[in-house]
Image 1 (cartoon, chains in turn cyan, yellow):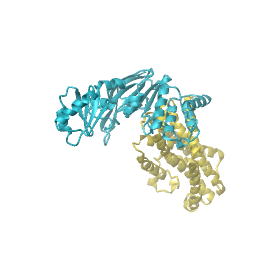
Image 2 (image 1 turned 60 degrees about the vertical axis):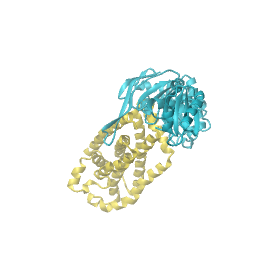
Image 3 (image 1 turned 120 degrees about the horizontal axis):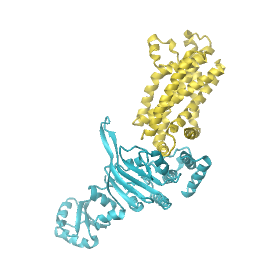
Image 4 (image 1 turned 90 degrees about the horizontal axis):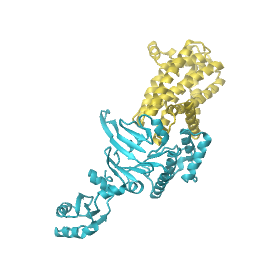
Length: 317
Length: 254
């Protein structure tokens, strides 16, 4: 549904625009029809720039892309007819109602007035907006506004929907609702591309994820497959200040241990079978005179994948 | 055809938004009326050297200038409303749809033009009891000139709003553009009162020709060559401003 080859974009920056920032440095993607595809990465990784290029809002400096069968560079108008795009901040005016915005959006996509009214009514029903659709947008809660934003993005039944950070700033209940709407759209056959810097969102919502850092795709796959690459389990050792170094020295060479990273308050250990390895690790530490304050056993997260690939954590960057 | 339809669509929405913010209408009407009622009485004395011995004659010189300044400044300041729409993401939302880029600009600029023309009509009506007299046909031509002025300055203002790197720069830039344009076109006082060197400078200001054309129309000289010169200059500049800003509407990434 979306194929890109070496998509690039750089911006002038610095005092007089003399230096250049490479926001996106050659992205190759293959998004399949009917999947929810996620760009996961820290802020500034180039996710939004990539999305805006694919949505025809900015012109790539180089590379090529085919979006829903239309060539991004030679037929942006064709791309526009086939896609929907919802910006992070949405895009509704304060002094009009949600329904009026839906009608306006349908008309901007070329519908006649009667048809636009019907499309708006359908959207109000499908997204369950009836309760507030005829109030001014200025009165909406964050969650209500977001649902209207998404309804606006799909008013013309596009093949592909782009969502930029769809749940930023929402409370957990509204977040769940937005996820449910996205899954409903996918069930209806739509291909959905989201950007997110939330690990749980990428994990729970996306069929496949591209982890992005410094304008490049670091790794791509289903969340399960990516996590499987990180062997076994993660054990977090809570250690007192100054104990991390000696503990690392003591543990190095343990057979079950694949990798060891300094964590926030101790060490992160990557192991084959964490539950079985913990007693052995503890006795080794005891032998070195170290008693961890806490021991946690975790399944690896997408952040562990990011950490393994970049040496940094998404949540810290 | 699509351009006309899309422009009408954007225009309608903009009129609706203006209608729902009545404070703008109140401000828009009271301001010019104040100018007329509180400033005009000074004029009779000042305009004596121009040969204005009665109020009616003073208004014939002053009102066309006031109308021009209304459209020039009103248009130049309209970009501020675009800043709000840019921030709210409304422009970006429109730009993802196949709606005409030129229509995004024209629909907005025409809303502004309509608002300014309504104000111009109100000023004209309020000036009538003071003795202002103008031929209907000349008045119609004057409104055409005003509409072009408003369209041009609105387009320029949107262009500034789109081209500037940040919102805070908008006010100083607009003021810096508007002030010399206003002074050098003799909008409030005719440049016939100015020293020769200032008149020579003013002749390079296209708005000077527009204002002179307005005055000729209001003084019952529609055949004066400055009328068609003013119209031509403003029409060319309007076309240039609209095409420049329309390009920014399709390319600009804010």
